[in-house]
Image 1 (cartoon, rainbow, N blue to C red):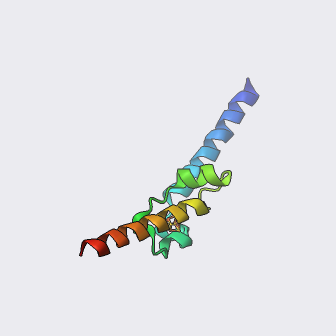
Image 2: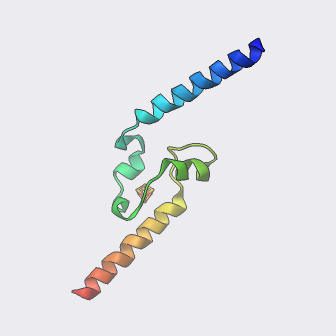
Image 3: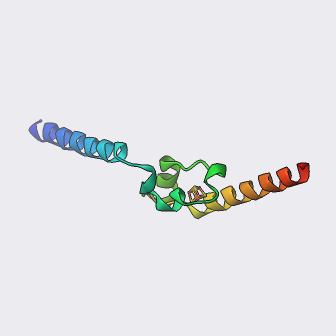
Length: 83
Ligand code: SF4
């Protein structure tokens, strides 16, 4: 019983640590996204990064960048045709 309680407490502390870490993130945490020319055509997401990289929420998955670049290209082409 005592071990279970202490495990629970250490899990709670770990969760608190992650929570504080996440709340402290700023836009510059993912520099690749901060400077990205396709960012207006993308939806950067920590959960998506986490799932696609095997647990690193700051690591951007390249195929989402390709999709954002394609999205940007298509939108700009459409707008150019419309003029
Ligand atoms: S395209 Fe890639 S680098 Fe750019 S904002 Fe989206 S995830 Fe970030």
